[in-house]
Length: 231
Image (spheres, one colour):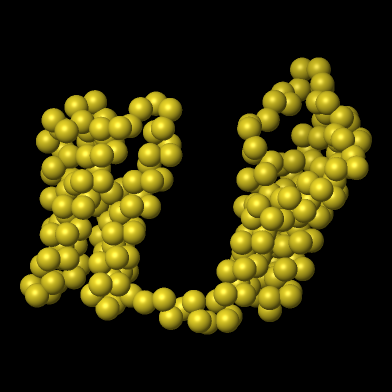
């Protein structure tokens, strides 16, 4: 399938065969950097090699030209503030181009959206991201955690870290259940206990520990229940 072949070529060209020194020079010299054009040429050649069909030469050329245009726009408008979002937008555009080419060449379609099993799994996974976080936050709204003032213990937390940790742990638990590896759920619970509750025990804040424990059990419980319902 052309889509998979082009994605593989993209991963090799963008991450494996592009040294950090190239990235730095492109960001500093922008359109004057020779590595910008060499990088696009590498993507063109990789796409041609992975397709290996002279009749589909236009696909490799399209990938190379589009890659050059997207990367040129990225380095032209990139700054310190939008660097992270620029990276994800850049990758999304590359994947969309590849998907568009595959769709145009009749190698990619949306028949998978008619598969009810796929849609159920996808719906379950989506629910366990932000929707589940909202449910848990509302359920815990009756309690307010105690301010973390634990003397010399480092209690500062990364912005929104708890939210993303919860989303990742629920998706991992859901994945383990979908592939019938329930032992993975036990591993997740054990790992979370070691890293999180040991810190809370050192802080000696019982109410905060109980608050986090309730939130964790709700998070794992939702993931397990969703997995069981889907299966």
